[in-house]
Image (cartoon, rainbow, N blue to C red; front, top):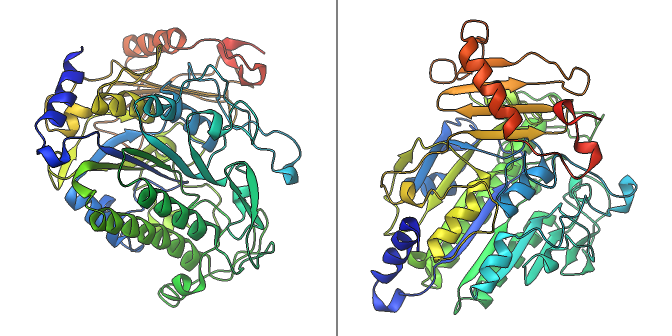
Length: 468
């Protein structure tokens, strides 16, 4: 038994007898939510009262990272505990024509997920939201990857409309009432998903459960219930979005803020249900985002909202604005209320952390380090480095070691692209390249970049040192 696992078991064993059982685990992942789009991270315009209370009652991480700056690889790394240099999925990989909704590259049978490990431990497991790791019936089907229940968007492309004609209900399509492809409809997809998630919690209140809630908000298109939009109307000047990439919207700022406030309200409903069912003290809840704010200005006014608070880059970039994301964790009686952690961590640490909490081993050959000790306010083991290998947007690689951050970009066109080096302690905006001034550090970082990577199984994920 490892020392960290013994700590986890000690926590469980010291609980009162009535609560001495495996904790429920809820992992919430927002979609394209920027680092500074919650009140607890400095947001001034968008209202997030429930998540702000969540932060006040738990721990806020200041240096948490996604594993990749777009949807599918971020989800793959989260579920399988591997960084981008080892993960199977390394950028979005669409299956079939756009309108077929056949999903993305499926993860494999041999890829072990958090859900599989928890199911073996006796957990009821449910996923509600955007999956993106394999269509129904494929090896990546959530029902084949450890989940007892799935409801939502199996395909990421399908999730570009929040008033969809159908959602996937386990393995079948459930038609939603009154929806056509447009700004509005009778059934708001995220509402239906939240409702099913809450039903799952209620149905499994007498056994340990794992809820994975990858909400589709605030990813485009700009669609929200009208009453949520009306709550923001008139607060700011608006320039209508004409719909060049996604559905048009007359008040894009209000719509974007409304989507985030809607998401916040669903999390408030969840927290209220946990209290109602007397599950609150025995449930640990994580909240994060899959990557930074979208770069599609005109649809999302990231400058107006100060979405990444001065960080460089947005979604699709391995600079800080694309990969640094919020992480809030709440566990009453275990995590100190209102605490802050500056521990540098990543999504691929989730498997190790959750396994540590429940006293089981993570899958073999994973890259994560449990941050349970940080959650408990104890001295935390640190990563030697954090690593990103992203096959999209020209091919990008990044590494963070201590306060040093190295980046290489556009490696598909230029395999010998220059390494950029930044000191995040003094330059969180990554504005001053120090590679020439610090050649020894630059060389060390470049060596680690090469050593941390293995050749991708999928040829289209190969670039730079991987070759064509």
